[in-house]
Amino acid sequence: MKRLFSLLLISSLVLTACGSKSHSESNSSEKKSSESKSATDKSESVDSCLEKAKNKPTAKFKDNKFTSNKFDIEIKETKVVKPDKYADSKNPNLAIVYKVKNKSSEKITASTAFIEAFDVYNDTKNVQKRLETGFAEDSDLYKKYGEDMRNNINKDGEVTGVRFFEIKDDKKPITIEAKNPDGYTTKEIGKKIIKLEH
Image 1: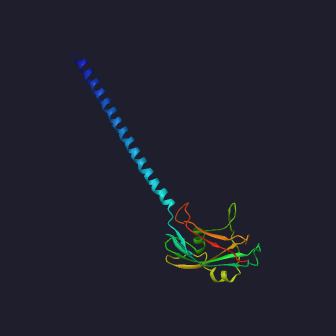
Image 2: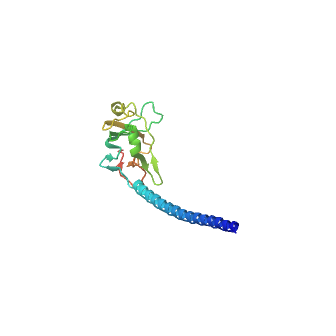
Image 3: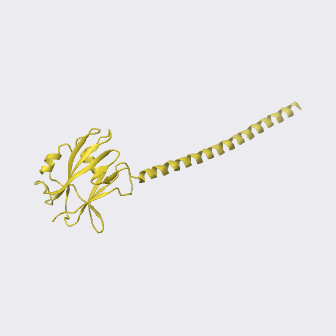
């Protein structure tokens, strides 16, 4: 009888433990599911905010002045110049003289700031044909502004630089289109159209 009673007692303890474990696992599973849903909701919310931030440009371009969180650029002058006497191409160049102000502690040069801020192209019927970098290093403009083009600009420092672009089709206007250096966006920030004189 004692043996039977002991066996029943042990059986009931085992069943109670299993039931408790099963209930605990069920609660744990529900809790994990709830936490997972909450994490997914938060993740979607963060992704949504990031997507909106990506699509909202922080840069602006108006009246030859480009502003962004990292740097500002002012286009001072555009003119057509002869190519360098050592250049492979004999096509003229569009010279763009501009001033850069570094607003951050990031390393930035006048050259990289321009590349981050602008695309330069001929707008044709089918494509926006990007202009290739030109060579006019023997021009007065390069002698005046070329020296500091590749040097890092200190925070709050300003440098005037010049970029040259080879003109292959002088019948079509050239577009300088601003882009957002602080992130990707599909929205247009602004552009400057240059009509070449014949």
